[in-house]
Length: 358
Length: 94
Image (cartoon, rainbow over all chains, first blue to last red; front, top):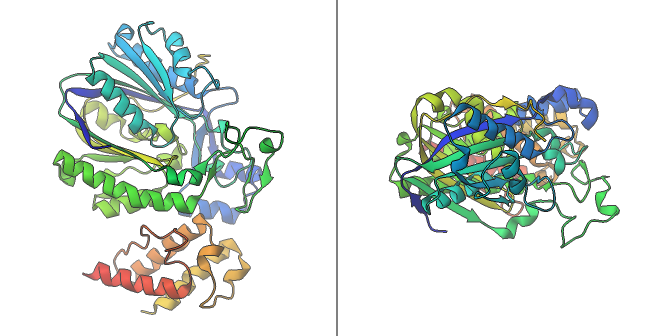
């Protein structure tokens, strides 16, 4: 895709809700068979401390509905003006219909509101945001974008490689027509790497069977079934380091901005080393690249960019006018970025899931 | 500065946690990249960066776009890694 820019469209509200079970890495010793040395190693290399997960039975849509309801309760944004609800997730309520349509009813949005799901992971916020900006650009007044995942849906119960990294979160974001400087987007995909992050079985290509659901010990030491998410960590590491710095550089060139003009580079929170390496390659001051989200909340997939803003930059975003560069990268493989401006938006501190909205 | 020793010490340090037999008697042929998983490779990178910082008094970024690519990784053996680090240090000096 060539680069695309929009005028007079902006994010005006952003809320993230996380699962209300806080688990420290030490608490998972027994579950994953970790000894003290492994715990120390995970803390040193990936910085893992805690993660927030949703309790059994809570869906991603529940977290997103709480986030969206918080926006309607605390801002003058009128539900009647929401003309589209886009839900980006890999953990839908049902195989069909689209969860967004059910959420339209739960949130009391008008029937004139278009609603649909997008199946994407860590790049999903950028893809969803681009879609929302496009809809507003085409004439819609306001779009509600919801992003996130409850990872229990696809990461193996005993997978000691992936599961300790994962956190559950659901964000809601309002995009609307407003006076705002230009925003710039670029999206990419490369399906030749689809096997590096994949749930290999359970779809039409490799249907579900009794065997595909059975967790077994794998070469990499994890215990997972063929219907659990698999990640080739080495390939994904290379992919992130190879693609994200050029993506941000080209976006800044397209926007005709220098690094200094950007207040924050909010990137998908893969792991701190990847983020530090990207920051170093971009020659950006480390204070401008938040990297704690994964260590405190866990990997929030498509919610990790809003999760970082609500989790660590809430006050700045609520009180200041900021220029930000954002980038998401992951499953597909797919990646994308944007350069945006925010003007003292509604962005409270991350919420814990409290209500049963089901 | 003896880069070979820095690499061997870094491997020794990470193996205190890994307990990997193949890393106990490293030769120039030991296939490091095949032995280490992504976390192990990252652990080695962090250890090397820390040792180089202590030695040189400045940060040298050890990871590159090929670090974890099976075909092109400089982490194949201690020989390829030594050559790569030498190159990185030269590059960072200019």
